[in-house]
Each structure stands twice: as C-alpha cells, then as structure tokens.
Image (cartoon, rainbow, N blue to C red):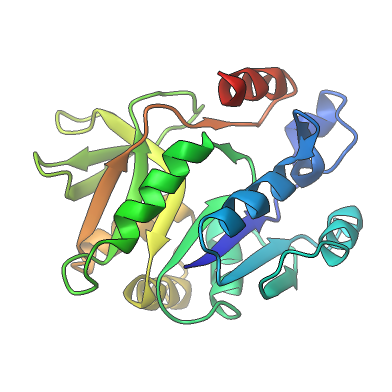
Length: 234
C-alpha cells in the first residue's frame, strides 16, 4: 500500500492561538503529528510515503529529511491554494495503484486505521474504486456529510445532513488510479476543494464504499491538542 499526507496548510488558527511550531510538528504525547502518521503507515505495510509541505515549512522539510523510515519518501515542497491542489501535486509523484491519503491533522486510533486498511486491501479492484473513512462523530466546523445505502455504498456527499447521511467524512481516502483520473479532470475544469472532487467521483460513476470508524478528530485549534491526546490514549 502506498500512502500520502497533505501537510501544506499554514495552520493559521494554531499560530493565532500561540502555537509556535508548524502544525505537522505539533506533538501528541511527545510525537509530532506527521511522525505519528508515518509510523502508523509503516506498521500498515507502507511501500512508499508521499508528503507535500508548503514552501515556508523549512522545519518540517528538515525533520522529514532526517527521518529513516525504511521505504521511499517522495517529498513535495510547494504552496498550494487548497487540499485538492495538494492532492494533485502528490498524485504526480505517487506510484500507480492503490493508495491511502489523509491530512496531517486527522487523528484516529491506530487499531481503527489498521482495520480500515485491511478492509480496503481485501477488496477486489474490479468491485470497488475506493473506500472512504467515515464517522458518526461530528467534530468539524464544516462537516461533509456522506450518504450511504444499507450496504455502505456511497450515494453522495452533502454540505448539509440528509436522510441517508448519518456519517461525515473522516478525511481519510483509500483510492486508486480511477480517482486520480477524476482529479485530473477536476483540475482541468478549474474545480477546487476536496469535497467537490469527491462529488465528481460519484458523478463519474466511481463505486465508493464507506467504512465507519467510531471517532476521528481534527487538530485545528490549540485546545484540540489535549483533546486529541486524551482520545488516542483512551
């Protein structure tokens, strides 16, 4: 499995609230968030890890360049206008085939993530084009609701809750080459934002499965750090 991390955001809210470290280097229980993700990925049979950081994140770049992770590390240093644009930059350096993408501030329990990856790896390529991590736990300021049928096939992505959307996006995406083609089309058409890319996958006929994880949290504010630590320790 190939993995990718979007770590190109500025973390402006954390800075405004007195956090001096770049967001990827903010520590949870003494471990930088980006280092935690890399460790979890290597424990989940990583074949490669691709990461994008913005051009101002010299500390993060230096941190990554000193790591020895045992698999190829593809590092992109580029400032982008959105996560979808960051994803596109990563898609240009990632190996072909199945991959899992997440943002650096998406926090989940290790056992939950391992179960998700195992479920995705067990699916035949011709039966499913991707598996989206979803959660019933709403902790996002602007959640993306995910509509599913009784068999957890994704029906749609909504800005507001619908009758079929008891889940929201967890910000973790297990996808493949078909999704990258949709991404390229979105870029060519001037589409922006990850949620619009996800809608484009459905509109393009991709078959996406939802995988429920009880709780996934984000670290957007200084107060989220202690909350995330308590969550992963619980």
